[in-house]
Length: 326
Image 1 (cartoon, rainbow, N blue to C red):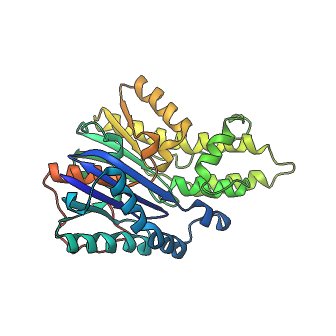
Image 2 (image 1 turned 120 degrees about the vertical axis):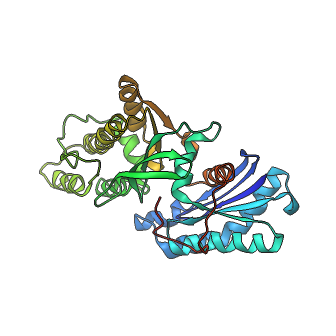
Image 3 (image 1 turned 180 degrees about the vertical axis):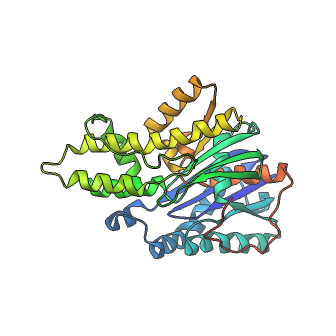
């Protein structure tokens, strides 16, 4: 099956083509330069940027794939969660194409896309625990089949990616903050600044409001510690709190495989520490290639392929669903 995949849930306009589950072409356009002055995403700006470029990107992706409109067998699109206006741009475009071409529409949960970004070339090993960490989500879920899962834990306040962005702003770094902190932390000493790791009680929930407040107070001290040391200490505290929940989630449920996905899974400290500690505990850690950690249409197309394999479909009316869950 030849699938055209569309992703516009936040600030990345992304188009991909798939042939029998294999990626043919991926084109992604980010909007960082438009949101950077605001230190975060402006929903209206994101929607307008999607609308201004989505048709050109589709044409470009088809051209590079050496496809024409008749090549397409189905159209996959993110319908949630995300920014409502941004979702509407992609969903309206996909619905229009599906109607015009008389092709089926495959609505994809953005979170499923992230989970299966770790399996672009292989089949997932069930069961597995997924640690999904991004700017809008921070959760642990156990999957027993492609689209059957149970929630194990989630953030009680901010998503970890949001915490990275806010701390980056406190440090005077550019948006998006994750890569900036990752780079700066490499020049710092994570032992020089003591920061809390979040929730200490039993359970698998997360919390980042206290960590953010601790960084704020730390930077108000006179004199403040070097920014590189603060970045390294924050990164370690934030990522260690994820590791301290994810590995026990696998061990306590007797699940030997851990999938780490979402934009924050690109963090070099998190990837290295999870792999080392997971291996030591007999847990196989699966991470997406760096190119597929942030929002992209490749993960949407791959999830759509798995939906076909599992004979899974959405029975409710397909509308933009900003608060969609697993």
